[in-house]
Length: 230
Length: 223
Image (cartoon, rainbow over all chains, first blue to last red):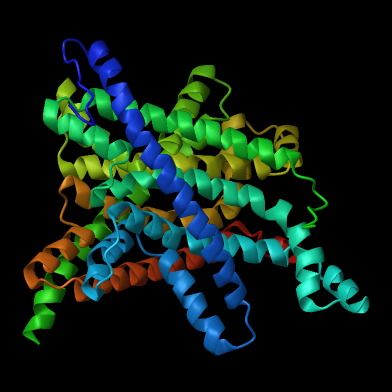
């Protein structure tokens, strides 16, 4: 029994049917962790991408190093670092929040890179034209550069979203009750790993196919010329 | 000084395991990449279908799920894998599926004129693939392969969850031994970062080497 739902171990099929609602509980946590982690990655990545372009090396270099570092070290170790080290400083988060922050940290290096590439892909002439029209830097960013960068940035961000969805399984290492952890617990209690783990694999497959399809759908719908911010 | 030794000795032993795992899964992953990447473009429907299923399944599910499946689920249908074998198998199968898409993309990016020219000079299909198409495609594959190699290194950390004593596992051991988290995990992160930088440098070198060997470096520089 888990989450107050009993399982039926008479046959494999009955077992699969009886644990499906339990795995769905895990799926909800998986999706929540993805949503929160991705929101952190989007915002943090944007802030760091902007700081990275700062004209002062005192700011841009440490930020560049931080991005390089988070991108090139394993998510699992970053997760352990946050999970075990933060409490040493008196910061105690629930495992779920620590997990979402770790996902956000690991991916902010990627999203920052996507933003940078998206902004740099906007032709130089656009900057020059804005300057010629006497627009301020802020106005240029808001009304010229970012609207044109969005269609270039969205597909790449979408791919990272799908990738992050799969990486949430790693949060099971710090007791977050996402899908894989739920399947593991069912396995430990019933000594039947095959059915729950195969089901989790199948559920991940369905989710990635759906989300990859969504990303492609959005990608096709985006106006290539750009999206005005107001 | 003794503190430092207590910290570093297990971490270095773990690093050896991590490097072994990374190198082995790199080699097997590369073989799988070419097999499935070329297989996906095969004229034989069975080979094409098998390649597509392999690529979609291993790209569509989490590496950790695949690893647990090989380690915990397979024994229940009578196949027991050593954790080391399960770890290498999961890492290779996973990175191989990503690599296969790189191989397929690079082959398809070779201009169609190259195929036509190969046919015009009466090259056999296999001969054209190995001597005309793949060498040019290889140059295109190298940069994405560089990313995958680092990805693979980072992925090796997951083997600690199926009891293998790699660098991440060693970090946990050291933490339990010293009752201190900061030095153990900081040192571990730094070691992974250094390993990644070595791989990145190695792949850049290989990238230039391949481009020079194939003789298209100049052509690419000219655009």
